[in-house]
Image (cartoon, rainbow, N blue to C red; front, top):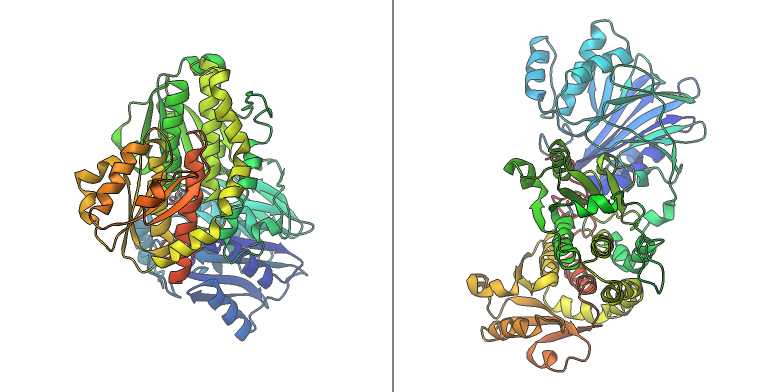
Length: 615
Ligand code: AGP
């Protein structure tokens, strides 16, 4: 999963491309490169390592472009290695003769294509599938096609996913882009145009975007862009105006995007509730949910499918929907769903959850369900993303751009949307009366203010977290609707601090995990005063009896918990439907402050990418 940027316009593009790549570094950051024209020739600058290495190289070598007919074109790329280890020669852009190219995706038939090209006398200089695409275009160019025709012929031979930015020395003021299987958008500027893998890369220059669909090709020339379908026919596309501002993407004074986004959660939840709940009444408007009352009545089963943190949100969703709407729910990891020949059919509803809207496994699950006739709703944070566009309807989280690789505000707003959905379904089916819904809706509406209260405990949480940053194993325990938060807390710690952590249903302890407990194992127990409290308390005693260190997240006013736990973080006691969201803040902060103390790269943890757009 990589980041692509491209530029066509009157400005010298080096800085534009580098700053655009900086905004995409969360998508992959093991190597990066640029391709520009200098005196009519393509010049490529590539570096292994973070983008800052490339910036340094560009500066030291005074790498820049010269105009062609008063215009510049250029492409850039930041890589997350799929084929070929991170190295300069595997970095993009790749060049083949007069062609330079950047690629995001996986070419599944690259080996056979490479054999064919080698047999025609071409030579390869990298281990990547991307270089094969550049060679294929070059091969068609050599057979007499012009640049555009060579691209169209080459992409017909590709199997797999590929978003491309391509330059050609024979037509130096043209840039061709292709979108297929991985995200690529067009930024429409004043006398200049752009391509990028994601909106934040271009917000500084424009808020007008065109979302490309699979198999669409864009031919950019100075002051013009033409979009064509795979058959080469020109097509008209809508220009969307996005209200995100460039500073929304900046860190806003926080040390990391992740901490900024933890603190943005109250506002993100306000934005997600906007126009969906009538204040002081228990009326919910989910106008973006295209499900009629009749369709709701006919739902046989709801399948909840996602990856990672979005899967944990779906776990909470199952509890909420089954509790409020009494509709049976089945949970699946997206990477498993399509391979088990699921029994989903026309009478079923699939709800996919995805922050990016581009996760390959989740998208594949959506397509599998549609193939089997099911209706598909997505809970998504990125309008215009592939999952958004391929769903029958999307209930958007309004979290704004989430840059930190570790998902935080997207997760809490996903939980809010699951609340809204479950309440809407329950009230529609009358399995939930407005009177019974009242406390749930009110605590949801008040949630942003309650979270502000929880965030005030940050210094205490930081102090506790820092005591344990050298520990090697953590356990997270909870029951009921809070159990997924134990899993989420463990995932947060793993992915940003690289410390092993396990989340478990507290009732599972005696079935194995308790063997992990000793005086060196911090155990984070979520123990609010709910119907599971006594059971969780006995689990806590079992941990203490084995000298485990207990950090308990519990209810303000609980006088017993602080006596039995080693550390106690009191939280407001609210309705059960919002407690998972309240408990999420402390586990996010614990992971953040442990990682900070360890000095790991919080926003761009090793081996990870923000959106996994390949299998
Ligand atoms: C969460 O912190 C991780 N970054 C990861 O598990 C993520 O939730 C998962 O890859 C799903 O991404 P999506 O929500 O964009 O589909």
